[in-house]
Image (tube, one colour):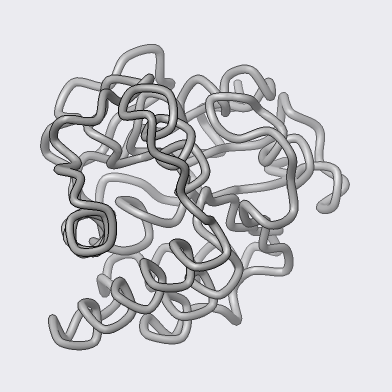
Length: 222
């Protein structure tokens, strides 16, 4: 029995990584004169998968600039939302079908993301898939960020699910590390983030939603 399926947001449920990168870069450049390419990412992913808190900490450590998160984060979130609206992005039909299949089999689902609550709600509204998730964990709900497993541990706890019977869908190395550390089986998703074409230490990697189903997940529990 599958007790939980938990999805990362950016690069998994939505092709938002380019929009996020543009919004982060724009605010950093315009407000602080900082080129994001010159800010080392502690996770080696060009700040694609990390939280805005992680980026702010990296700027302070490597560039010596103190960023006010109460002004920086809302500006980036607004920029992401605007960019996504302009792009006309929609939910992948294959994803919607998969979510519907899981719901039909009574599988509890959650989102566990490094995005803020506002940004997460924006993206779910754009995609029209919020109805599938009974639990949504954002960066505002935790104190430790990926690759720490807290977000996935909290999600499983709220779904009353055991790690051994839970699946996590991720697109980044730090997200995979977080899911594995939480004890779940991790599915790597490469459809929206081709840089991660060879994700390691996963139970399965997929590049489109047709490659996964309720029955396939059930078989992976054995």
